[in-house]
Image 1: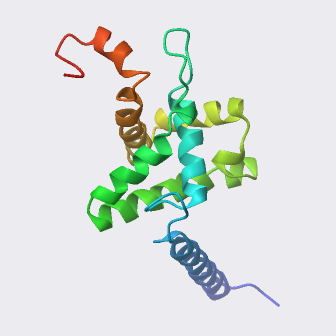
Image 2: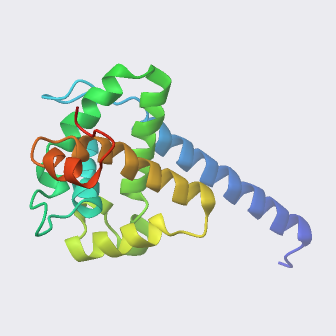
Image 3: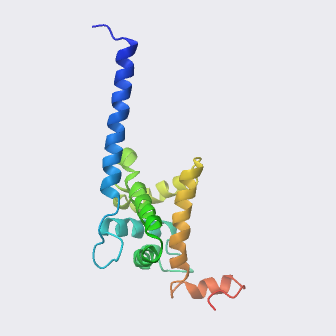
Length: 169
């Protein structure tokens, strides 16, 4: 059988349609999952990703020994999602799922399942990505989680020393 241009176009259209169906199915699976106890909005896999992300974004240092994954930032984020408009909260949850699963093609596992060293490598590449929307999304998530980390009772006194603008009044 001779392959014609029509065969290639049909194959291309079929592949695109299949990819769209799979992506739609995955997005539907992620969209608006019910919360797991003790959270009001988040489910356990989302909280696990947030702890991993927070630990990578805010590692323990000599000056501030509290690492992001130990600061309860998943609970902070859950409360923040509970108080924002529903559509915004759903989109942030969709971002969490997308980022957690974005390492499957390269690493064969979710971001939250990777080793700490590999999470750091991936994190650094993402927040310095050449793709503006991707870089902005990852940096925004760092900023949102950072609001909880910087106001944590063990971190806030250190932040107050760095900022003369009246931080922590």
